[in-house]
Amino acid sequence: MHREADLYPPIKAYLEAQGYVVKGEVGAADLVARRGDEEPLIVELKLKPNLTHYHQAVARLALSDLVYIAILKPTGRNARRALRENRVLCRRLGLGFLTVRADGVVEAQCDPGPYAPRRNKGRRAKLLREFDRLSGDPNDGGATRHGIVTAYRQDALRCAMYLAESGAEKGAIVAKATGVKNATTLMRDNHYGWFEKVEKGVYTLSAHGHKGLTDWGDSLS
Image (cartoon, rainbow, N blue to C red):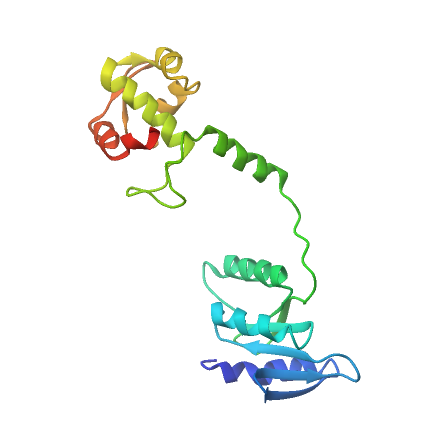
């Protein structure tokens, strides 16, 4: 399947098997189906979804509650994630979501209907913990010049700044001086390559750590 029009025959057959009368290119809609006195079912076709596709489908909600987007079913390593993300977006918008496999089989990923998201208390708590741990507003709503500043990186910066002044020091002393309770573990894990182990429990700042302070030092202001 190489064209949007290639999606039409399998979707038409899929809906006709459910008792619909199907016609293509009716008004502004790619496909319209009727079954008795039920409200019309509208499908907008695209090989791959994009923002315009969603705009078109949402506009059709002024005509019917039964509006679907239909795409060629994605394949490859990111296919499952793409399906999940588009399914969630369709549910959020009250749209249905159909996919067409390369062999012509149509699969309903979700049907139109009101969306009531379930709150994820664990993820909410994690978000609020990160908010409380961040000092200031280092990201200004987006990425900094070197990347996103996390609370974990700020803790690493506190340890690095202390070692830059003190020289090699025990993790317990760094923890007490900086307020970073997990300083020893943080320096041992060394995710950013900023620390070097001198002996058991004692760490110093690496050359990469000095550069890190230059790049990220203003993230604690």
